[in-house]
Length: 323
Image (cartoon, rainbow, N blue to C red; front, side, top):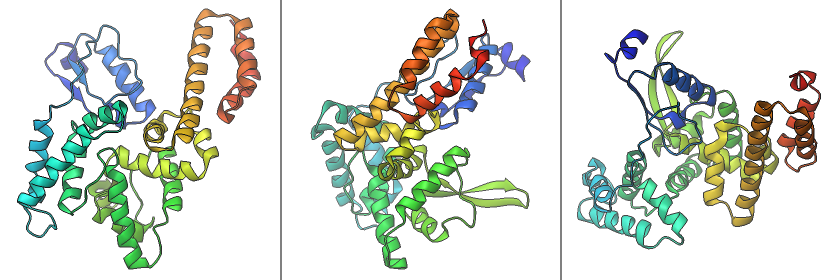
């Protein structure tokens, strides 16, 4: 296959780079660098990633106002007579939804976020389902509204509130395992309510016993919703994972949805970890052990736990100082 790509007889298209683990992104990047004379197209939502040298970047602009409106109106769910909101009422709700997103945003940042959401087919389809159910979700909080529906349903069935904290901790564990699927014995009652509201989806997958159905998070942003929810309860937990690229989406959600002080604290720690990484990289390329010691001492005295831990362990490694 490599020879076909190299001779441009085969084009490789990779979509959703932002949805895979960091090591997978690195493998994709390495493949693209090796195949620099071939046609390799990589699509991603905004993400911190260094494209291969001599690559050509094409940035897609947000859709104009009429395009997301037409897309949501075209969804079959809007014509379903079994839905609480359908037909002309559904179309009116769509117009109201788009108008609120673009005309009533509380800040320029919120408006830009809404524009991105209104350019994403996943978000538009999600919005269509919620509008058909008679809901008017915030354009930047679709998962929140869907979860409220799941929570209401769970309360009706189990007579207790949805165990968001426990499920969020499990979502963190799944992130650490790079596993976007629930095992059959995990949160079965909760999963049925999340599946009903399309926060989870069922997919056929090959297993040891043949093809089996597995429940997956509908999208990375749904996964991030549950991770960020448990981070809100355990600040030390999000501080622990601030340097892990797999949790980047959760930190972006924190910046967008937490109260200003909480979001500021998370963003400052994320920025501090990134600054340390960039400084460390520059020092390694510069081969200056004296600068390295100074930076590690500074990092060791900083606030975030993960930065201090990294500095302490690095200072103990004699190999780091070998030129």
